[in-house]
Length: 270
Length: 163
Image 1 (cartoon, helix red, strand yellow):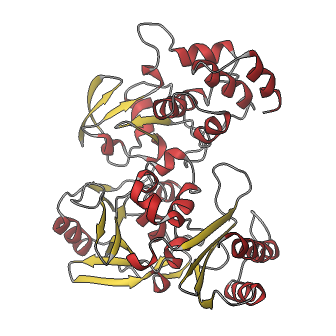
Image 2 (cartoon, chains in turn blue, purple; image 1 turned 30 degrees about the vertical axis):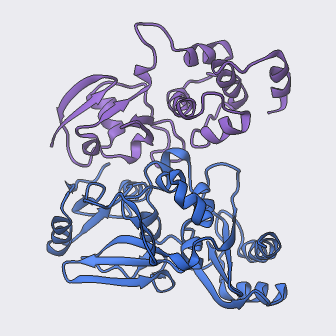
Image 3 (cartoon, rainbow over the protein chains, first blue to last red; image 1 turned 120 degrees about the vertical axis):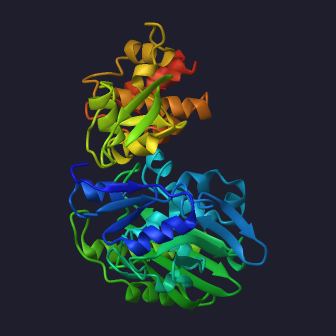
């Protein structure tokens, strides 16, 4: 790294929250796979980097009866893929996780980091949006819970204040074992950023879509029903996105592929 | 910050600035230059090493994060001057051209073979998805992995022509 910064790796939660409250220009680091590249490229200039991987309990995947799956801030993408219970109950999370970057990065990158980074092409966001997941956000001022449908505020912007940390994600038990599917368009079969990502969930007659890479933030399309015609669902998807053209593909192609993937998923997901 | 890191079973104690990457620490502070810097952004995998038993892109890890931990690099692959079976297979199958990707490639394949001693061609491709070879030597690399895992027969060798 060419930039100089201080480094802390607290074990106690109180110390982490204190560092965030007491210092300006501090960045929390989970896996570091986005942050360290951003620092290297000069996009971010933190005076202090606070590694949260050693904070007690943050590396845990746990289950709260009648509430759901709890993913701590330091849980890596490969932790999710290796969890037999996640594979069994939340195959949609697994489908999104499997397509995220490369094996080495999945050993390091975290689920929480992937959403806090708030890239429009976040790989985990489509599943988390569809599954009705919530972010538990903590600071020295207290704790608050924000559904992911309200979490993203713009490109690389979220509701997180500078003294706050996303401590854990709760994926509600109501969406365990739902029927779902995911499609991600990439330029190559291997490791690549998503060009378009679409997830679908069907449950108790309701239908939800989560779409990435097609608007300033990942998008949730809610309020649809399983009995809606494919045309209605595709039109809702198209209306919800505003894709731009960039070096990876044109906006027109993105809009077209949102339709293709939505149609395909409606057929694939029983 | 003073760090103590075990690299290839040897303990190193060094002072390191907080913003130094594990890659720069290995290459410039310890002189272990088998680990390469390609892209510096987690795309190419040339800097792949094991940190506490898991493969990572060492360009995206801070050296201070390895404090108290263990690192394995390509320098630990050969033992007592003898190439490992995997390295020998790379030589036999001409899986090295310029050699820049080879260290990271071997690390990723080592990880793959630890979890899956007899990977299929598809599984080998998945295992090296984070490692780029720009001399287009993937077919030879895949052959070398099949050979090192005892799966290369005359028949599979024929099939591999169009991998």
